[in-house]
View 1 (tube, rainbow, N blue to C red):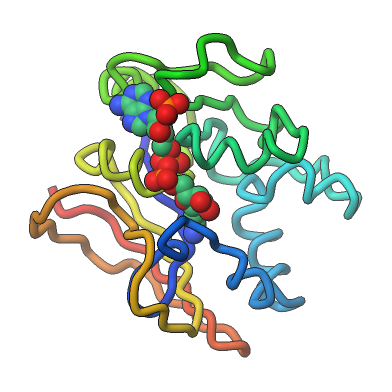
View 2: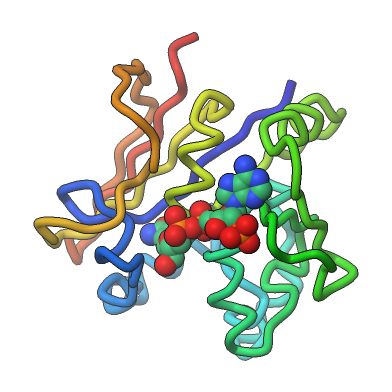
Length: 194
Ligand SMILES: NC(=O)c1ccc[n+]([C@@H]2O[C@H](COP(=O)([O-])OP(=O)(O)OC[C@H]3O[C@@H](n4cnc5c(N)ncnc54)[C@H](OP(=O)(O)O)[C@@H]3O)[C@@H](O)[C@H]2O)c1
């Protein structure tokens, strides 16, 4: 069984964006040191339209070959006219309203999201699955999440969009690594205690 990894950025108080999901306050923290880390450790999490202008479109995938995201997160790319924001991955978008996929590389999951993700996890691959978010889809897939990579930016929001849009439940995760960066960003990885 391959892993579903929620690779997510948040504030110190655990919000992945403002109340409407806006995560633009995080952008200034992607400085040279942190970008080098992303490029070398998680190159496939950099979107295609970010990679191309930098001439790093051909970076090989390191950990993931598949991405799952919610329609609201996918919409951010669609609004910029980008129909395949992670062209180097197999892209799955959860949506009950998108009846047709806007791109041949994007498959829409309209029913049984958990079941479809379980099927993807059961596939034979050396690479894992990148759960991009947002909050709603991460909440629905919470029980399927095997690993967390939490990029914490040194800001407090007070309120905002939670990491998981799910109900109250205490679930144990085991820390695997912590890395800190000069600008105060901290990246922690955990695996779920099963
Ligand atoms: N900080 C980070 O790392 C990070 C990462 C990703 C996203 N974000 C932020 O998160 C925000 C979006 O999050 P969100 O919680 O509003 O939305 P989301 O999880 O991205 O997408 C929600 C949508 O997914 C579809 N969906 C949800 N459950 C489904 C199911 N069981 N079956 C089929 N479709 C399903 C629905 O689409 P339909 O309405 O089409 O049916 C729903 O409206 C964005 O603003 C983005 O900035 C932050």
